[in-house]
Length: 319
Image 1: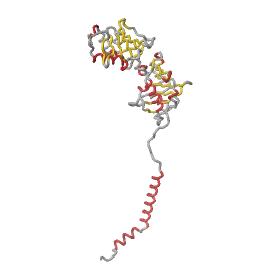
Image 2: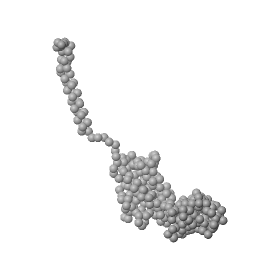
Image 3: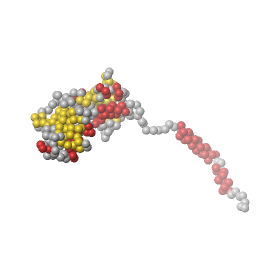
Image 4: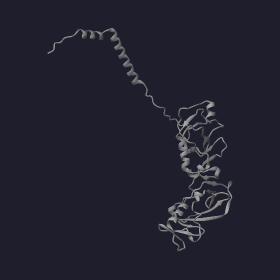
């Protein structure tokens, strides 16, 4: 067994640890560690700013009128709430608006939160096109008592990024929004399904040269023994059931059309009928469709018309 023996160097090292200077330094280090731990335990958590306050204060269910315009003089669009929650475009003679689009607009505006402002000076408002007289878009929401919120929209610094401010607020905010969300084009708000009928309920289609009637899962000519090309017949029926259009012509902007026209009468299983009269616009490749159920005329492009007129030949040669 090795004898217990303390060398002179070991005694000197132990003595150094007990020196006043070393003890003072050790005490100072202990104090620093204690303070650091205390600050760590009591300091508040630092997190990114998360906006929670609504930018616009309004009740979407109470809004009865939406007006979208700009300061450049372009035509505005006014959306008015109608009966049973429906919406119409005032400038188009109360033409039906797409309810899902209007609902989405109100939901988008109601969900906007107030972020940290990016500017608030008069010079910044002018630079970002957010003054009372100069803006890219102005969206005004009204209820039965009048305006409840107005949003001014200015420059777009990036994709789905807009600088905007409430009309009552002098601060500029960057929002996750696109100009297309607040379009002032009437064509972007109309209900494009107005001419459409349920395909499964179509049982008869009459035209100038032929009449097709539903025959089980297929189609046949009424009073004609000619064989029907089922693929072409179903293509025609599907096209008529899903007619779309590009523009609405009101009494104020009815366009001249040619005298030559084609008529299609669609009969549904419940006996209801839709009569479409289609003619070409003068000096244009587009067409006008008149529908007995509505006071408007519908402007259709060549693409919308498709092969409807090409199939209008005698003796059913295309079938």
